[in-house]
Image (cartoon, rainbow, N blue to C red):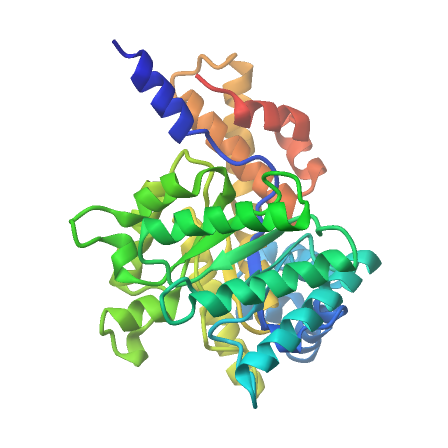
Amino acid sequence: MLAASDRALEASYRGERPGRQPVQTAYVPADRFHPDLAADWGRQALQPVADFVPSSAGFGSAMGIPDALAVIVRERVVAKLSDEPVEDLRLDFEDGYKPTGDRQAAEDTDARAAARDLAAAAAARSAPPCTGIRCKSLEAATRLRSIRTVSLFLAELLAHGPMPAGFRLTLPKVSSADQVQAMVLLCDSWEQAFGLPEGTLVFEIQAETPQLILGADGGATIARCVRAGGERLTGVHYGTYDYSAALGIAGEFQRLDHPAADHARAVMQVAVAGTGVRLSDGSLNVVPTGSRAEVVAAWREHSRLVRRSLERGFYQGWDLHPAQLASRYAATYGFFLAGAPRACDRLRSYTESAGGGALEEPATARALAGFLLRGLDCGALSEADIDERCGLDRTALSAMHKARR
């Protein structure tokens, strides 16, 4: 009697997507991209750190990091900004992109130029681990332009080399499952047109419309979108300002910690749980520029909001300015470093009792292992940090994280 239900559950809830999830997505207008952009963002992020918080104490105070962690967090953040400042890069052809002159001709030109530059960055190994483009939406007014831009970009990109690893498309302002299904069909068509292996093209959607959270029929449209996207849908990203504006929230109060944002993200979280689709929080438009006081105030606010997202299970977010990378990584590293000792102790207790301890469920052990793996992936933790505390290496953590009851 339950066999069909078992198969449906297995098909719909595949578990977490394997591999590393970036902790941030850098957002840059497509016409401003160049092959060394990631390294430039790193240098621009390091400069205000050197200028305004040269000491560990000052850095900790600016980022809201406890004194006991300030030295190691600053050290690891500086190393990250030097070695891999951007984990995920999105070239924007939507709201952040403002072509001049003949807009159609300009976007054609910029799509080809951005593709050539991304191919050059990939060949030179200066591209971040994950890259992609945000096209225009598939709403009636922009869908043909969106399809043309992606088509031109892919043609030019593949004319200059293979598809970069970690490449994905971002579809904004989704309001119906039909748009997601259309994106799946488009990916099928592009793969056939360019001779790509099936499944090469994947995409994320952005939650920027109220209709995605609650449809006209009273259902959670986003849950239908996850089903419609299948294996090609890799993520759902919250759009802070478009979503807030659509609800009539005044500009002054369009924030990541607004109750309306919390509601939308909670629906997103439930809809994707167990499906392999990843979550990302939105952006903060207060950027760290100006005087020392202005920069520190922006860092402090950004750090607070990043920590808040992490505490709620959103391990990724969007950054609009290079200097936000410093507060992004500071808050993220502080979060994982503060939580690692307790997570290691709990895992040690669990493994020493062969999984039979009364205080920890197997699901909790999997979550603790996942927490430590995320810390390793982003550079917040080292394998020595974990091995010394609980005697588990990455391989053991991965096995525990993947285990099913």
